[in-house]
Length: 156
Image (cartoon, rainbow, N blue to C red; front, side, top):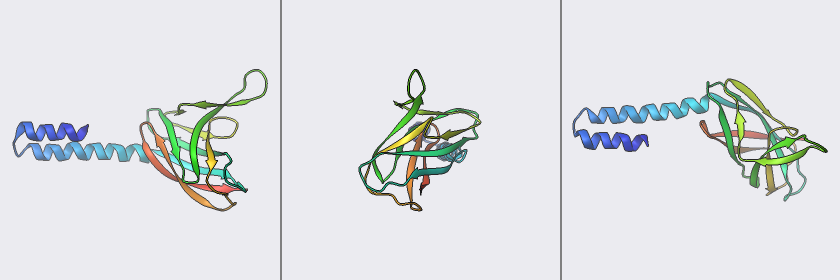
């Protein structure tokens, strides 16, 4: 979108002033995306060990949002699983039950701990066994901050 506006300005103005303006528009857009992802930090990402492929595992982590606006976790891509789902745990009448949700809200100026008994991500159909001490990377996709790569630790 920013690129199209800047290009339109260059074509419409046909002046030497348009090129620096185009460069400024592109630079501001890139800096905005970089600032957004730097203001969201992911720590303590972990999964339990799995002795065989094919199962499902909860992925937990802590997300710190230092911006003034809320964000949302939209999807997670990990090479060790075929799919992932965002879940919450309902505690209505009867036993607690996991429920799939479209996104996980991340509050402005706050910290969100993804845990087994609340918001979390399930890695579905594991492609391999996971031993304690191993690590792998996942791409965590947010609505505003974009994609953030994080290292995930396999625990006992």
